[in-house]
Length: 120
Image 1 (cartoon, rainbow, N blue to C red):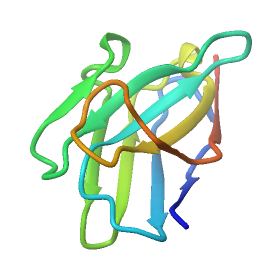
Image 2: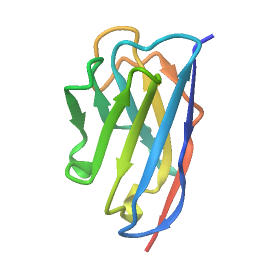
Image 3: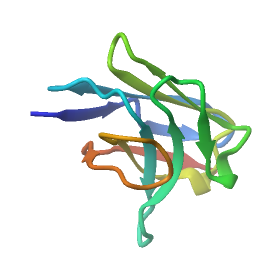
C-alpha cells in the first residue's frame, strides 16, 4: 500500500529555516511530487511541485525565492527547504504524489501532514 510520511515540522521564530522531508513507501513514485499547506480556517493550497526527473519545479508566488523543493529518486524522498519563514507560513504541510504527470493539482496520494508554526 502506497504511503507518504512527512517529518521535520516544528515551532520556529520568524526568519528561521526548516526542512521538511517526505518518505514514500509501498511503491516508487516516478512522477510529480508536491507540497501543499492548510492554515487554520483556510482551504488547502498548493505550495510547490517537482517533476519526475527533478529538473522542473513550480512554486506559489508567496514562497518563491524562500522555499526550495527537491527530490531523491533513489531514496524515494521529497524535501521542502523553507527559509526566511514568516508567520503567514504557519500551517499543516502535506506531501502529495501523482501517478502521472506533474503540476499544481491532480494529486492522488497524500500524507498525514506535519505542523509548521512560525512565531513573530
